[in-house]
Length: 631
Image 1 (cartoon, rainbow, N blue to C red):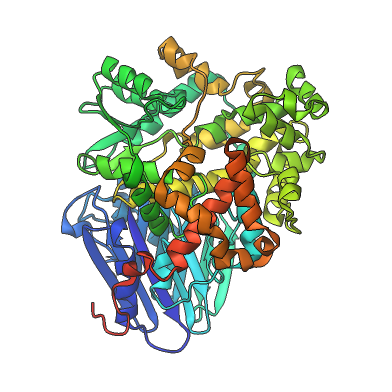
Image 2: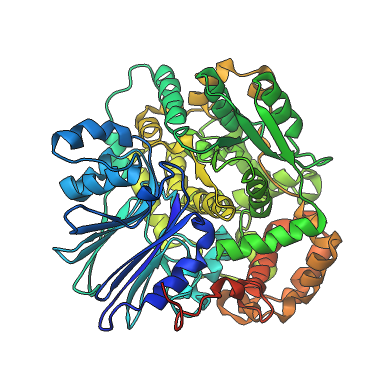
């Protein structure tokens, strides 16, 4: 895994100092080597994190022997070895054992038509010198990031927004997207919270010609179409276990040590079990500890690791270390931290970096297999249909916070709104309480994806919801995983996002997703049967942190809470209608009940302070002067 940057100017020749500044801004993505390519008005840069073929021969940019093609590439093609016989038969010879060289030759031979045959995650830029065409490509599910900007001078792109800012593009909040960020915790589609900065959508490619003035964007992967065309699966549970084990096996391919993020839940435990059962040695597990907190699962992760002879590494992050990690995570992520565990995952990655360069994770399993408790509202089970009656119960009789949140959710009477807002912690009643309303309550991107889901699963809302999540919530999780691990120069791999698993599962009949109160039937009825009962029967908890306690008890976080009303953020767009002083007071009176919306406000304002504030460490990222630097 690595980082890529580049630009294509309309008029002026490519300036090497600009490319150097962009590359240095994403140094953490590839501290092992740096490479550049300059041709006329075009510039391509690469930062390498060495994982396959550690020699300098595998450094990028990669050039074709004929000199007509150049590739800068971030990611892994796990099935790259399958292509050796085919390419050698066509006359290609290899100077490395890296997947980059294989990808270059495949693109030379087949063009972007070969993308459907690739098993992996990737974001790359491919330059065809003869055709004067630049192609940018992103993997099916958005595991690897790619951002871009069109300006008066030309086009620029980078693995992270900071790479584009280093090119001289100004940092500005786009107030038109503050409402979606607050309500959904993530700006969907091509948009970001930064004005003028867009992301290439997963499963899409962009082709640029004529000095980047002629641009075409295409969707090269459509999950609905792929699911419809997937071959019939005769024995789904056997198929799932076999394919999952092969996915894990492929993701163990590396010339560096590999570890696994282990929570103690079904998903990550399944990965470790698969590794051990396939005979992999020197395995290590990495776990975030929350001693004394109800969400702590470290005892389960430790026990399971020891039973499989896996080296367990548990770490806890408290006090000022946690605050420092939070600020560092903001700087790494560029965009606001809205999953609220980015800091501890960054901390764990920094610890793991001392021993491994690759980490496997169970991320994506919930969205692919149907694991979240919140999905059950839509599974058609009679006892969950009774949840409609919760609106008749006064709040004072709802003792559990989960039930109060559920009541706020069920107050959404529109079925589509219930689907689209399923992952939210802020609902219409919360907006009314805060005195802020949005004209962008249901963003068009999410509506369009829901329509795709309805076309694929016309009568099953549960399946529609999974499809919607795979094209929205999963994107934000992938962004979080990429930043928190790459912030420590670690590659994170997701076995559950192997395209065979995602597409095959999407093709199965509804009966394999009619949970009857139990999620992840494909996993539970395959490898799940081989896991210990203390894992298989363990109630899903999920990684979360007691932020109400942290915000009120940590002096630095408490100071920020008390001074939030001074932030210029609350003079912008949607948030300008909020009485932030009153919101803070309401939170202090009842922190547990109001934590859902306060986390969004708190972390967005903390993000604004760290990215735009006069005393922020963020500006130190741009230490390279683009007007003076030389390559």
